[in-house]
Image (tube, rainbow, N blue to C red; front, side, top):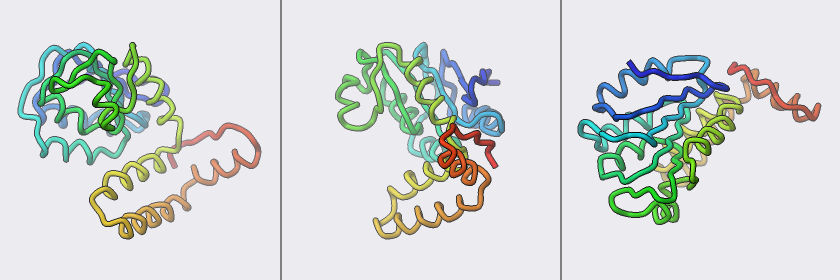
Length: 192
């Protein structure tokens, strides 16, 4: 079973090896079902082995995660890791990292890596903590709007985004966000 640490609503998983996709997703479901975890951070900076066939089906499963996900990695990674990494919303890599033989700077310029940092885990944790500090329903629906919207024609994607925004109008977190803005204070989101 995957061990994880919960810190500031971020579920942190530290990997040395990446298991087969079926095992990975089954074990990850336990973490994603934890109501105290509003964001997932996978630290793959120490990964030495990748098992199984990571392909488009595995990526499709990863994109269905409700919660936002952040990946930190370093080192030289092959095409299987590329498929693994594609399922994450945010990726942070060391500037010296390579993916499929291409340097991380080039991957950053192509938009496949969000940020480069000498200490990718620390930067990924910072980003995950910011994401986890936001209203979870809003974050989850924003993620859904982006991933699903990419496959839609523009007008349909905009309509979809509007529909999701209307759903958020009924949440207590939305009311808390408005009240906090008016009162000039930090919001205290509860996930409701």
